[in-house]
Length: 240
Image (cartoon, rainbow, N blue to C red; front, side, top):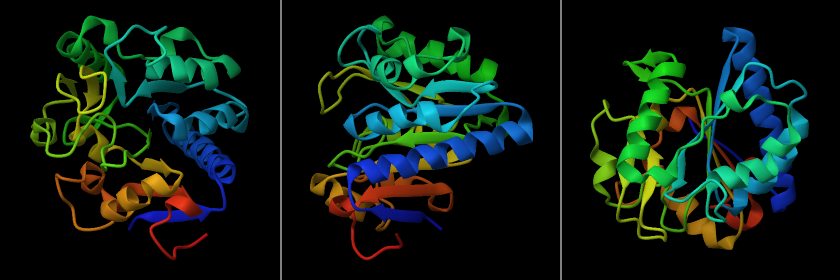
């Protein structure tokens, strides 16, 4: 069953999300000695990442990954890696070798190919041969997209052997991107979806309705999904 909590404003939402992420990393590290965390870009997760830097005291054993990336260099203002570097990474002590960025500057196909190899090499396969992230943090677009998996896109029907996919026709600029596959999202121990603002309320509501390729977020595994929203993005009366 999907866990949904709502808070009065974006700051309270980010505070709760940072605490839950830290707790999930601690549990994974206690159980297996390593914790794999995948990040997304966007304005909603940014404050969460800033708070997360202080929410987890010890970052030993944590591996940082990305759910998607624009095909730009790591210093570009559009880069998800840059967002993480300026919010989370600058506030923690973590070796660069444990931060696995998507090489967007290589283009969608080569960047996706190389990231799939990294996933195979570093993340244990525990679900049908798929590498299993301990937690993937996701935002949601007004159209219901997650990572760079957009409504009706062919990437949604990629087979389970596809770990990472190149996108050449994103409806949002820039058109070229790299994204983990839906199979990787569904294989994760847990996904956490964050949404704030009235502009996301319809998307959150649609995500909780019947699964549909027109709302990619609705295809996530409900029993492994945590949704944290503010009042403005809330789809209706839910637990706080």
